[in-house]
Image (cartoon, rainbow, N blue to C red; front, side, top):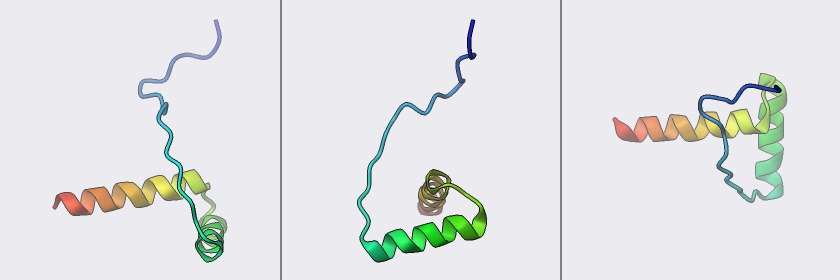
Length: 54
C-alpha cells in the first residue's frame, strides 16, 4: 500500500549559505522562470558539471 518507491530517490542533502544579494538574485530568478530554488540550484550545478566534462 501507499506510494511506490522512486527509481532514483533524492535522499542526499546539500546545504549552501548565501548572502542577502545572492539570495535576492536567486528569488528573482525563481519568480521570473516559475521554478523552485531546488530546481534552479540543481540545474546550475548540473550545467556546470557537464560543461567541465567537455
